[in-house]
Amino acid sequence: MLVSGLGFGMSGVFTRIIEADAWQIASWRALVGSIGVTAYMVCMRRIRVGVTGNLTPAGIRALTGPAGLQLLVLVGLGAVAMLLIVVSLQKTAVANVSVIIATVPFIAAALGWLVLRERLRRATVVASGVSFTGVVLTVSGSFGGGDLEGDLYAVGLALSLATLIVFIRRFGAADALVAQVGAGVALFAAALVVDDPLGIDRGQLPLTVACGLVFAVAVILWTEGVRLIPAAEAGLLATSETPCSILAAWILVSEAPPLATVAGGLLVLGAVLVHAGADVAAGRVSRPWLRPRARPRV
Image (tube, rainbow, N blue to C red; front, side):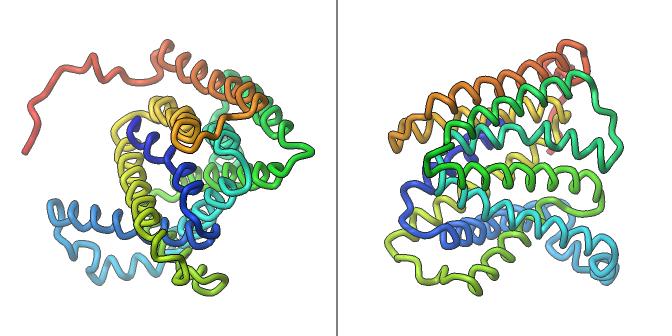
């Protein structure tokens, strides 16, 4: 989870140094990422169930039923999020996008209460309020400047990611990694209609491919990490993306965060860390370092 945060945090740096429009960057990043995730899935299937394990008649019939419809919903949401991340990073500061994305766990908690009827704890409501205040403070620094549009795109990105999380939990039969692959392919296909991804400067392709590969590794690590640890621990470790992205943009492309973003970011990160820390203190999450060590199975 920590390494995935570093990988996701590099998105801002790649967006700054690649000289192409948003559709070109987003579509190539998504396509290369999909190829990388697919290669990982094929490798894992060869080890576990064989390459053609999901290509049986029963598997094909399942994709034409409710599970197929659920997969399409996840694909659509994933494609929208893949595009919005690049658009927002091109139109506002990397730090602003990172701070706004950090509110995704609280938005997902609110949507989970509305859609899944999950219990919403008082501590989560308070932390969500503090987090929302941090976002308002961050966005307020863009009023009168050219960054407000990008901040609003980042808000849309946070909403789409939170909705994606809720639907992944709601659609237990749909595979999140398969949806990520489909989203990347769908976004590239859409780019062929509305833009010209094939017209990207050939000198920018190595950076674009590197961006997609880093994205693929981050997605794989995040997905596998979520499966291995409880949600509260995953949420706590996922916050590493925010400082990683801000520091990477500051060090590598000399983009210092605005003062309002620093203040808002401290509020958001403080809310996330205090909320997750309270869960750990109350024993709501596991402590893997206290588990007895077992011999690994080969």
